[in-house]
Every structure is written in C-alpha cells, then in structure tokens.
Length: 548
Image (spheres, rainbow, N blue to C red):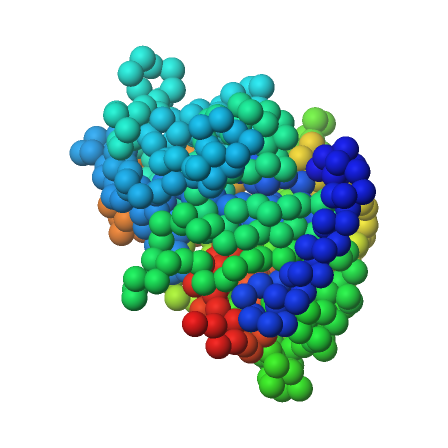
C-alpha cells in the first residue's frame, strides 16, 4: 500500500492529509466516526490470513460469513438464511439470502456496482483456503471436509444453496465456519488484485475500506448496500466511518482514551492496569464519569506446560512424574496471583477447559494445599532421592512476574526453579520443538467448543505439526475423544468433554492457572456495545452520543 500511494505522487499525500482533517471535523460535528488504536498494526485485510485479533477486528467489519457467533456463544445464520445437518451428521446444507451484495468497486470488472453474493462465491472462498498457492493459515478449518471424493466437499447447488460434506461427523464444524477465515470473498476481486487483495479487500460487510496507509492509519466507510437492519427496520451500521490509528505506545493509547480521541481500548497492559482498575478488578471510580468497563469471561486459559516425553536414556525427570505435577498444582496460590498480578481481573482455575464450554457458569475455585503437596513430594523423594534437576520455566518478558511468583511458591516445596526469559520467537520455537521442559503458555479458542481445548492432548496432534506441545499421550483419552466427535447430542457430548477434562486434571500435563477476561474500556457516550467471549469486534449497532 505504501508503494501505491508513492506512485500517485504528492496529490495522494495531500489527499490523505485532507481526509484526516475531514475525519477529525466529522467526529467533532456529528459523532458518526468511531475511533480506536491498534498498537500491533495490521498485516493483511485478506480473510485467508486472519491469524490474530488485530486484523480480525477489521476483517469482521469488511466481510460476512455463512454464520456468525453472537455474544452469547450461539451460532446463528448470517449470509446463510438458514442451515441444516442431515441425519448422518456429515452433510451440511446452507440456503443463502437473496439480498446480500458485495461492495461496489469500479476497479474490478463485474463489481462496478456490486453484485449479489452467490453460492459459487462461498465455494470459491472456502476452497481458496486449501489452495497451496495461497498458503492460507486457515486451511485447517476444512480438515474435516471430504474434499477427495467426487461430488463431495464444498459444492454449489444452484445460486442459492451450498452443500458441505464431511469425512465423518464432526460437531464443532459449524463453529469453524464462524471464524474470520471462512468469510466470503468475490472471486473476480481476488483474481484482479492477486496478492494485493490484502490491501484492496472487497466483501459484503457493514463497512468498506476507504484507505489504509500502513503504520499510519486505516479508515472504513459505511457500506450503503449492507443488507442488515435493526429491529425497527433501520439499516445497519449506524456509524458513517471507523478510524483505526497505529500508535505502538500503550501510554499514548491510554491518554487518547482519556482525552476522547479514542472511543475504546481493549485489554490490560501493565502501563495502565493499576491506574484503571480498583483492587477488586472493577473500574477505578476516578474514571466512572467518562468510561465504563465492559467485561465477559474470555475463552482463554493461561497455564504452565510440561514436556512429558521421556528422555532417550530413560533418565527419571521430576516434571515428567504426574505425582510431582499434581503437587506443583496444589501448591499454587492462584487467588494471590490473580489479585496481586492481574488486579482480580482473571478467574483462578484448575480446569483447562473454560467452564462455559462444559455447560457450567463458573470454574471451581481452587485452593492452595501446601501440606498435601509436601506429603506427595516426600513420597516421591523416598523413591527418587534428591538432588533433582532444576525446573526451568521458559517464558517471555511479558510474563516474568507470573513465573517469578511460581518460582517463589514452588520454592516453599524445596523445588529449585529457574526462570528463563527469551524472545517471543525463541520461546515459540522451544515449545514447538520440545526444547522447553516447562513453559508458560496460553490457549485461546478459535471456536466455541471444548474440542478446541481438548485437542491439545490428542496424540495425533504432537507438536511441531500440531498443538500438543506437551506430547501427552493416553490411549483411553484418545478413544474417548474420538467417541465424543461421533456424538451429535450436545448434552451427551458435554458430559464426555467433562470426563476428558477430568482426565487431564489427573494426569496434569499442564497446570492451569486462570481463565482470562475480555476487558473493554469504553467511552460513556458509546451505545450498543457488545462484548464477545472470543473478543471479536461488532460495530454494526454501535452509536455515539445522540445519533439518530
């Protein structure tokens, strides 16, 4: 995109400056521009590469998928007017709406005035994820699709119907179609722009791209052709524009929120966490006049993982003993960590799977059991006398405080713990290749099904090709996991999920610490805000001030 602006010379630069001034004036005059900061910049606006939340937030404004996940973790139709699963649990059929149109784009033949979104667009968009020339990071969402058999896979049955056949029943599949990867793109725009589709996105979403200058800002304008309406029949979205800044300084983002230059801020950063939150994790009363804190439990678990593969010479390593791992878990004061390091804004837990995915409102609050942990370790030491190899936790600088707290608490058990702080890239490599005996990590759900968490412990998913970083392997776990995937009844499957989660709790290849929380600091004048447990951004019904 930088080259695009340079090739148009100084006129483009002056136009950009005038646009920035105009957007600022519009904000002051009619409150129709929503503004926020993205400290991590954007890598691409192509759904096929929506790996992280930063581009997902923008992509969700530009594109629609067949289905969407609402703020209550319910899957509902979007471009698909309705959908159904056949009695075999393998064939999904989606009937498309007839009033969904792609953004108008005069540069693309066939899209000068936009056109209706058809079944062939859905087929093209999904099959594109599997194209090795595209190298999409989202190809995995279609692993369950039976793409190798003639007449199967993803098919268009006329203009209005899409049929997707799976290799075998896979209940979480519909949730995978709610990810940003599965958004629908027009084939002619992708073919026209090629790799530059990343900066020339065309979708059916509530907003369309006005311009994007990397490292500077991104502006979206209201899509006048968008099909959605509110309950009163008013067209969505209400806003005229969205302005995204790229200031990497978190302090500047915080000041921008305080001064009203930004309308919301997401997450808890050490730069402002203690300032904005009180001791109970609520909003500091100092800011109640201008802000409100919107929260919801996040489908995310922070944990300490243990590499459980035995060494080549069969040397006994203490962290590979399940009894030792259970003792380490029992010795953690999770409540103290949550209160002192996260201002009470996380949910202490000894469960790896977030409770909402198991049909439970809250996780059982774990209590510290030092005496029990010491007794267990004494029994292990009787069989395996010390000295033991030191426990070395691999982490990044963002989590030094957390690992230091564990170092202290495990030290009361007589365990020697070292904290190894490395770069994020080095940490990822160590964890993926089994070079880290212990490691701090978190797992964030891509879709609302406990399978997304439990699959980390299936033996077929060993890292580096899969997410089983601990190399945990258990035949009974694998068998029960496979059985759960064949069950379509949600209540029965959840009961099997609970048993799988309990099995992880017994073997303890990971020590869960807490479930995170989505924290949005929103200006008081912003109305219609929705907070998603997967932290997606929905601006369709957002208003500012007294907008009509």
